[in-house]
Image (tube, rainbow, N blue to C red; front, top):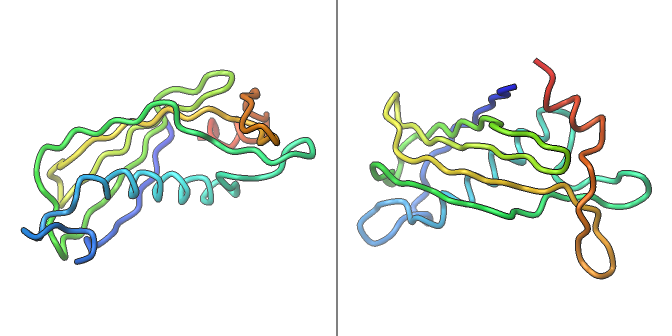
Length: 136
């Protein structure tokens, strides 16, 4: 580790405020989008069966710092880097770039959980998932 991955997106008009600046909440949506694309790139899904039950990754901490605005029509690269992998959780950083200028940095900690009738129950990250994340 670290494991890195990136996607590039164009800021849509619907993602901006009246000044044409990307609304802060959309950074969270894009962090989730890069996370899902990352899992797909590993041949996985953010929700998938394991030991006869559905598993998922509820977030237990999310933050984002903003350094410069993204505006309507900007091309933004979102880079995901796994920064910590424990027995049951994964933490990653998502950085947002326009050209080579960093405009924002987000952090997400998610816990691997089994879905139950009562909600979620944390479980160890399945070996196959851990191996995919840790692979060079």
